[in-house]
Length: 534
Image 1: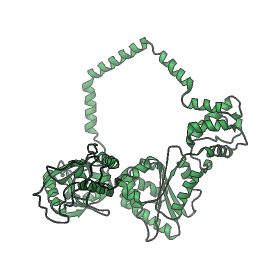
Image 2: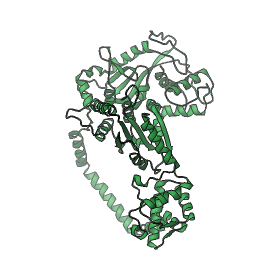
Image 3: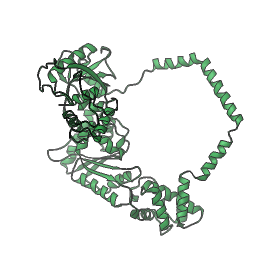
């Protein structure tokens, strides 16, 4: 609307992430340098974080103009995606053609690995850039971590850039993503523009849009813009766009602080909006209110009289259209290979759990120590209890002792109800479960994630006079709890003092695993920490 009046070829403050409009402030230049360094030096994982509207997406698009022509790139801007879908998208972005028989995640990973090896042999590099990464589920992030294993003896075959809002730092700090977080070697947190950058930013956008000196922003106008936006580029664009519109309607070539003030008021709703709302509220008369009440009563009576028909419709819908379950071909192929042997009933799974406990017992956190190693345990000095936790699937890799998980999802008709999986051992490379014949057999993570029911049970040795640990205490038991917390990714200082930081991390642990968030290391919290002890 105002482009012709000011002599622009296009809107200078469009909110779309056009890389031509990227203004390289000190922070944006440093962020770009970090990206180029991580990609060119094949550092593997790179994380760029920043607040909403700080220019992360524009920076990502501008990055493509700076990378080497031998670097193949795959860009993902939709982060609400499953672990299988992300593999499909990555291969599609790289132009990898999949055969008609491709069904499993392994098929996609094998094809990607072959592509990366061929690309590397020709002297090429590969870049995977994921925007809005804070929205990725832990399962998808774990899948992305596994892609970093595609490497030669000396070099990473693919460089993975995670770009996201500030919340991404908290997501990566989650204990379940500790392995991924430790692999990120290049990080940068993008800051908003400083006051000194504001004039350069606005002038750059006016110049790119084809401006020839007009409009002119006064110093007081810039000061007012910064007071409102605090250097956030997206907010700057919104204010300046509205200011140019106001100046156009008033046929002004100079943007003053008064114009900026009017623009900010308009963006916040302004007096006009308040008057509109006031006018609408006055139009609601008592007669209108009475009619609305009568209409609601009539609808309610009609619904009650027809309740049997309504219930019949919903009941028939529920019976004739059962809930749709996303079927994973990998899960069904494994089932054909005899995974029905892993489906245990209540009795056999409990018996197996206690039997496994006898030979896999280790030290108790926050309490007396028990013999380590593969020994038969003398339980005369304490009692054995069964504890249960509500656990998200991404956390099961933290468990170091045998546990039982309730199964859900697509199960064979012959499976017992309820149905359990008894897991003996979890390492970085494998998961071992106990089958119905008492044999230890490997089971894939896909199988576990596809049937994860969320309820985990484990055996815990306890004494009736167990001491509960709370803030302010100083003891060897507190020190042992701190060591376990630190080892599994909850940052505390192991000093034996139950300080404020220890209290906060205990609360976070309890929240992650569905326990009472009281910050007290009682029997259930001790049992959970015991389960995570080597």
